[in-house]
Image (tube, rainbow, N blue to C red; front, side, top):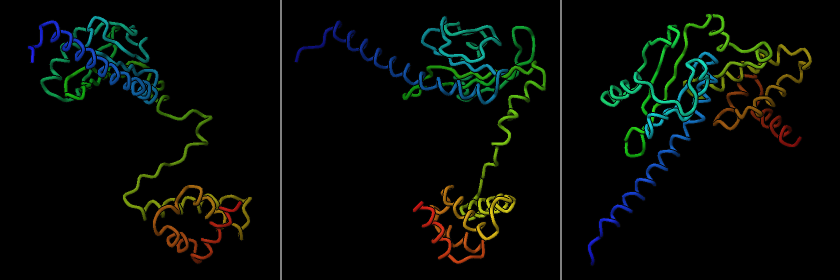
Length: 231
């Protein structure tokens, strides 16, 4: 079998590198939606930046709220970020620290290494919360708007299924009992109907738990469920 020429090896290595670079770009592209989600979570005073290490002179792939630092897509990686990159690669963990903005106001920054499937660092995800903003503006981003408050409902974080069912049933009972438009003789049926819509009866033994809580038979619960399904 003839030996592989230097040109052939060079072409093969180039193709492998090109394929690897494409995979890395695809991985970094997937983080784009994470950048938007984090910025939405923390509000307009939080700058979220996605860096690529492919070209440090044009490292910013995506940025939200970039006006806080005056950067935009295609901006270079700062000297401080490059120094931090070396520290992170030695430590292998994310780092959170307090820094200053370009106008000297305090910033809480978190930087996370992004790696490819081979464990090599290919980018950085930076979250910069600008603490120099007025306190009421910072807090406003963590509170529901007036129009949204009526739609806010408590989310259940439960340790087991029984606790989930019990808490959901209790809250549903409270809501129906407080609704003057639901007749007393129709309350249990309405409660079962709402629990069915919430998917509670997909949980094992939920019917028995609900019947006990409402002090009605399991057959009655089944009846209400059937009536709901046939509507």
